[in-house]
Length: 317
Image 1 (cartoon, rainbow, N blue to C red):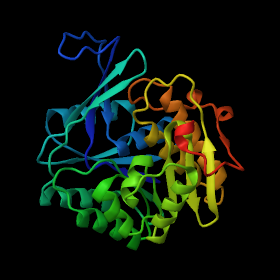
Image 2: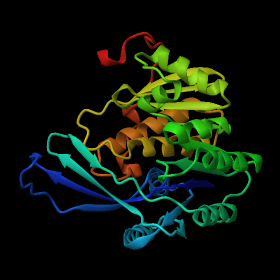
Image 3: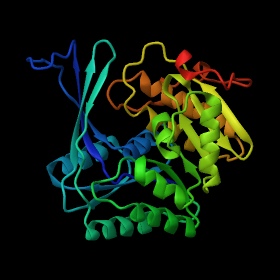
Image 4: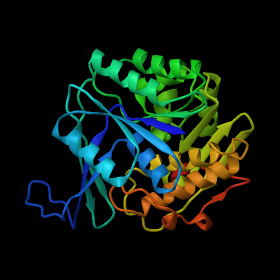
């Protein structure tokens, strides 16, 4: 079973506009309303492709109630944890030219009682051998120690942990030794405190995270594909998308695709990376934060690069 935890979920509104005019009146399409948050998106993608998943989601206020209603209506199995604050609401403005502007609220802090309730829900949901995906931004005021303790307790109870977050929360999670971390390029640069301009530099940075206790580092690189670094060395893959519609949630679909294969056969890292690339590129061809279904996947559009030019600058295309 793959269980996701989204500490800072959101109610996501997406509107489409021909051209954004700052300071002017902008008329948009009918909003697309979807349950959001990175872990929520991972569970939605897994569910859409027939892989068992449970989303643990703290919810509060009217937007939290609407998020819960939408998840239930979509058929995603979820454990909702009532919390004292209010669930945030995010807005995505998608231009006709493919440009995407996101306006994200920070969310509200989880109290000590809220965190106890979340941990209680996890204990009742996750069992040894399961995957726990800790994904998304941290709520305001959440301490690195809280994140580290969450990962540590899971690992001590023989639960596999994958982490997709950033900043201090990512550093704290790495210190607790998750099996997988999935940074994008910017998040990896922040974790190692330097710019990374080529595949070789990205691989070196990923090895630094492995030296800090992570088994697999899965780096999503948008139009440059992805790099997976484990004990057997790096694997590089690409998945070109000619006309992307929205990249929002593509990284979540990417992680969901990887886990869907890795959870079944941990020896097939090549296959898991190809699955990840297929799901991620499919998400880029869909509007808003829509997740890909089997009919959206195109496995012929992804491939591994067996002899990549590791020192070629990424900005060279």
